[in-house]
Amino acid sequence: MNGAPPLKIVLEGALLAAGGPLDLARLESLFDATARPSPEALRAALAELAADYRGRGVELVEVAGGWRLQVPQRLAPWVSRLWEEKPGRYSRATLETLALIAYRQPITRGEIEEVRGVAVSSAIVKALLERGWVRVLGHKEVPGRPALYGTTREFLDHFGLRSLAELPALAELRDLDTIGAELYGAPGA
Amino acid sequence: MNGAPPLKIVLEGALLAAGGPLDLARLESLFDATARPSPEALRAALAELAADYRGRGVELVEVAGGWRLQVPQRLAPWVSRLWEEKPGRYSRATLETLALIAYRQPITRGEIEEVRGVAVSSAIVKALLERGWVRVLGHKEVPGRPALYGTTREFLDHFGLRSLAELPALAELRDLDTIGAELYGAPGA
Amino acid sequence: MSLTVDEPIARVRGEPFAALPADLYIPPDALEVFLDAFEGPLDLLLYLIKRQNLDILDIPIAAITAQYMDYLALLQELRLELAAEYLVMAAWLAEIKSRLLLPRAPSTSGEAEVDPRAELIRRLQEYERFKAAAEGLDALPRLDRDVFAAGAEWVESGTVRTPPRVELTDLLAALGEVLRRAELHGHHHVAAEPLSVRERMSRILETVDAVRFTAFTALFMPAEGRRGVVVTFIAVLELIREALLELVQHEPFAPLYVRLRG
Image 1 (cartoon, rainbow over the protein chains, first blue to last red):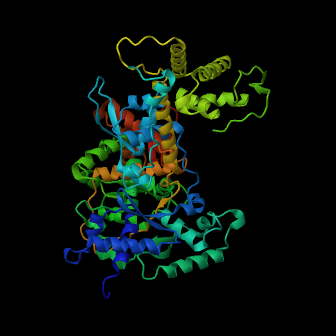
Image 2 (cartoon, each protein chain N blue to C red; image 1 turned 30 degrees about the horizontal axis):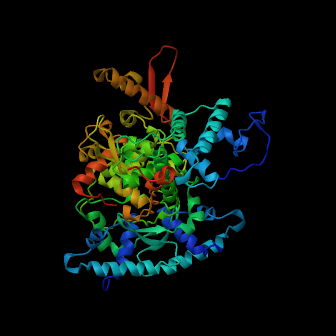
Image 3 (tube, chains in turn green, red, purple; image 1 turned 180 degrees about the vertical axis):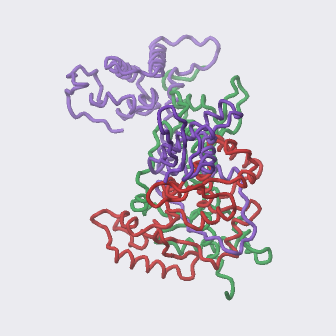
């Protein structure tokens, strides 16, 4: 072997061998202390890789757990046939529960029910816990000490997000005070 | 979507998503009957891919189970550190194979492949046998008389277990994740 | 949700159904899936409001209450089981309506009078936000559905001398991952079997022979107690079911023997 392969090739190999996200620290650790690339060099090489993959069957994305190589969405019609069945769709109840946990964490089951206006079945919470998207962050210091739920890094990775800040923005709540005025004339003295 | 992506790009995506070997029949099955490429076209596209990967961090090889993407050996000095680090790790495929043998023994390679959805390479089984964690218990009386794998005393010793019954139940998975995250920071990929 | 009027008269469960409440635009054949279609009373109210292109901040409470009650009446007529939440909402709507109809009481405490609809509007808005958020979440490209983790095999080379360490958590995580994928993509329902049975199956396979018969009773260790005996028994049955073991009895009431199949 004459000379080390280009940095981006080493990163490509490592990301593919890992089969999941690798963060900067993990990527750095692939190199001897004496030959360790700077974070800037790593980022530059990752950017090069991302450019190389344009139009290919793979893309580089940054998620909560680091950088991940993934097969892009436009290939899903073919690639998803590798598995006999389409992954199950999640029910609206599950998605609404997950959305409340994601946007409102830490949140108790009672608080979720209050917003949704209906009971949240244990099966839904259990499924989200088992899926690894949700975990118990602690317990609220109120009677019954209900569990406080939050989302996991796995949730972010699964939905291709780097952080909760990347969740689609919630709609604005509009002011209620004005209605009272319209209804009753001048607000109470 | 306007027009299907080139054949080789679809194959690239499928091979990367499968993470294990895919044979010609499997590759063909990714396409609608009306748009199914001929074996010759598939082979030509695979040859193109193999050429694209010259000098890259991935290579296409033909193995018993079909075609497989693998990370070339010349990247070993860097890539092997992924598993060599303090919490040294086997590849996802190896760990999943070991887990299935531990929890579902006695089990054949075919049964492992059925659950994992992709072929299990001989290298993985060999590594686990060499490590002394897995052994052949016998042969299943079905065509081909496949070996039945189970775990060893050494396996139990390594994990500090007195018996398989002490293996944690799947339900404990989330708790352990939480504990692991607290102790070690975010778990690796 | 787009529910339109297709047929003025329809059959519900085979019965002609003509007496639709006024302002009810849901086709009758959709009524049976009513409870599945709506996520709860707030969802139903939002639908009623949106259908008339009304703003949440400006809901005509009397009209909406009337429509809501019509739905409940119809559902009860169809004997569909109503979640309690729907009835609670009905009571609440009725209360708001009555408070709006009553003359405004003179302010005694000096506090601003609160619009009785305010809390309803707040909850409707709040629910609407998260309903939209759930749709937004569902639209995100998701692993295993829209995008797929890309990986390539790493054939372990001779350069790694120290064997990788594996923690129990790694093993468990790997199992969780593979079972999750199996469930996601197919019908490989991997039943949780007691591990003690699996382990016993391995032990029995080690002790029995393909040529020589082993006494059935020799497989049991009475010292293990009742539970141990049961575990062994289940393990033997499982091995027989999987055609790994053969159970032989030469004549009725004679001792049982086992041997490896083949």
